[in-house]
Length: 406
Image (cartoon, rainbow, N blue to C red; front, side, top):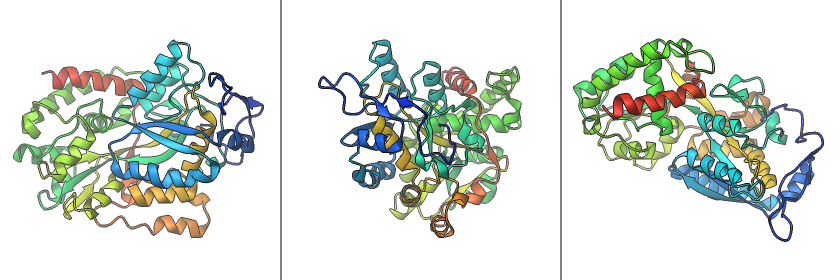
């Protein structure tokens, strides 16, 4: 998304956004580029938002809090729960290949960088829009202007921050055991079956493998550029050997891996494992307060740093309800919505708090996620950037070949 903060217009001229459609429902109506016209076109529309459905706190936020905030605009949201973003991408791609250029079934996608790149290359996205609440976003932040090395170019809108961290039971692991990847692997070897990670291409499983790769290669600087560098070959070979050595000490001796992050968190809650990596450290607080996770749950960031990125939503160019999708994307950036999401799910705000009045900023700062969750200052102290999308695709395929199938 093009995040020029002062503008409340979408683009100069007209955008072909879908309103209520004609009598047949096959063709979109043209909507003026000014925001009041978008709001008018959006009224009465329901947005089919395709997104990961394994987080119950986030599901509740969408169906209750967000839905309530959208009511004044006459917009409804239908959360279509998926386990893999590629399912939504494939649906949009299939519709495009079938010539369905209007009235598409997918209106909004919580998209990750790898799949955003695929969709951008295939011309799947509605691009070139600004949102009124973009004024709260730092448009100079590289994490906002680029998604896994792919320029955003006005084709998606940020809505939350993701920071990786290690979640662990402090009654089972000492601080020294979680100080580094090497220390964690040593602990796992001494305590067989008590650690695991989901199989890539699960988004968090892929992050775990990239974390291990960074540690093996000395950081992300070893892998520059948008295409896979020659250094990847020898570094990844060392990584695969390292993970193969670790595998017999993993849950179920590494003969199988959890399919999803939700499965990993369930194993932790049931006491089958004692540590796991997460992309949602803030959400751990709710699991502890509900008694799903032990009160001894704590979080750590490895000395070498932790991977972080921003989460985006994208609107397919053929979406049936583009105007309403813009309203949803804009509402997600509303400071009150960002605060509600932070409180409900521990999702760190995508907006720049420095742009808020002092009283509103203090509301974010006053949120207490409890002793189990690291403060944002510690999560952001040694942030490592994401690799370009080409690396992610290669790493996921190579992990399957060199680790899973060995």
